[in-house]
Length: 169
Image (cartoon, rainbow, N blue to C red):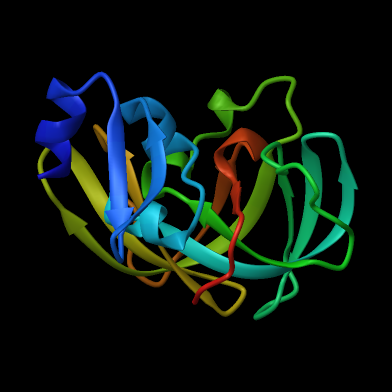
């Protein structure tokens, strides 16, 4: 399983259809997957199809296809161009409610509607709607009770919005 591989390996090579698709440390594979296969295989993630509206070095601005949300990313890959159709990956644990964690960076900020929630002890799992886009998120050590069908503000750092090199959804 993936957690066991993360804990034991110095490097991981992922194979799809008989071809190595990414070789990297467990941290790199989880936080910087190259494509949708790697991102999905290595754990829960939210995939967003989008169009690149601006790119400068490693920074890019995306507009999601489904809802028109503008999202900033610090993971533009070499050769990414304005107008490109891409898929972005946002891990559930990188989305958070507390604005106290936001300091000095250009965090993405969204309003979400909590559609469902499941208390899991050390974390709470949420299914949220972000302007018509369904997403999952987790809150570690949840101490504030959030109600189903309530609207909340959610943040994600641009460094946690990973633009994948292939759109395969």
